[in-house]
Image (tube, rainbow, N blue to C red; front, side, top):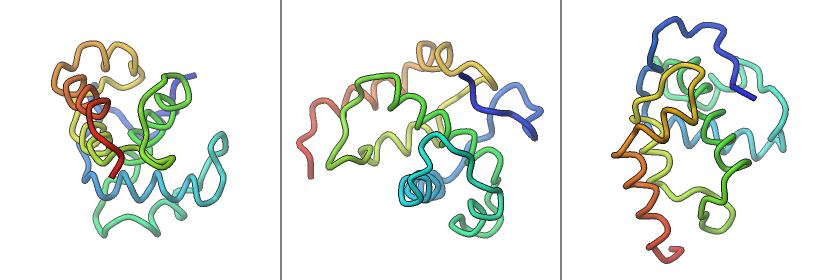
Length: 120
């Protein structure tokens, strides 16, 4: 399943602030809404003023999807901060998560780093 792209019209998803991505991730998991939609207003309430809500939500859905379908390492049930950075600034094609991951060397190096880190 590919995350919805209602307002994204560019070929690549615009980059976002890693802290906003982490806030959106935390909101989803605090609400227990792993498979459910979260309203735009709910997401906006946890993001910094001026954040690109659609891009943050899209990238958070991609991150969530990766953790649901891959055996990615986590720390105390949460992604390492490096995942938030990688998914916030990584180059993603709209609707192409798998292809974007395979073709993004920087992101794959960051993700590989997680496997070498102790849980802090």
